[in-house]
Image 1 (cartoon, helix red, strand yellow):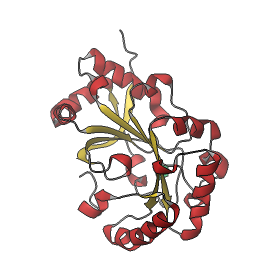
Image 2 (cartoon, helix red, strand yellow):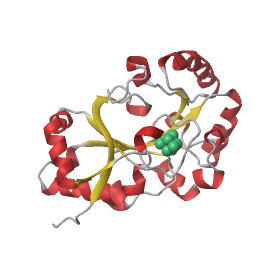
Image 3 (cartoon, helix red, strand yellow):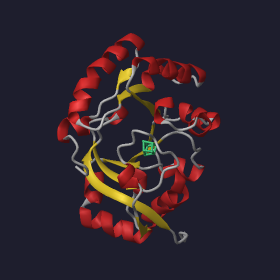
Image 4 (spheres, helix red, strand yellow):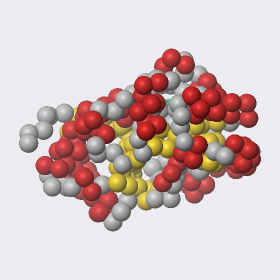
Length: 237
Ligand code: SF4
């Protein structure tokens, strides 16, 4: 099958450990794609996703080969697609996986996770590749207007897929917003993670015990930020 010529907006890539959500602790190849449709007031990757270079599918393949990423994936590491919001270029991402299949890289064997804020419906073409959706809906504390961050139709889709929901939180009164969201969209409580908003290990160690207390009160899970605990502010580890 011929693949349409296209490019991906690549901001960064690295091999590390998934630090958050349902698969925390899993070795993972991270690919961060550029561009986001939100600008959250506390975003910790703004400077990263605002810059990118265009890579063709074959240039991505060469990059994965040279970095040893295919070997990592074969040994069981996950492939985590993140951003920004990767759904902004979902046709290109699906095209990239199709091209990898043509090249016999066997992407159908990859354990692909995709991180998004849950406001855009994935196409069927992309959805068939993704095994785990890490959805991070934003609360009012993000500063993003409600009509932009809450798209009922999209959330309804993610609620029935293999997903976890990570809510960035920093104050007790924000829990009511999480409760309302979870009830309205009928999200299983066991899939909900309260994610302390913090950019450093020090901030995490202060806020996480409070969020742990809120987890005990609500039954939602305490979301880890293993990357901060392990490496603090160092990026690309
Ligand atoms: S949605 Fe995520 S990447 Fe985009 S601005 Fe908000 S925190 Fe940053």
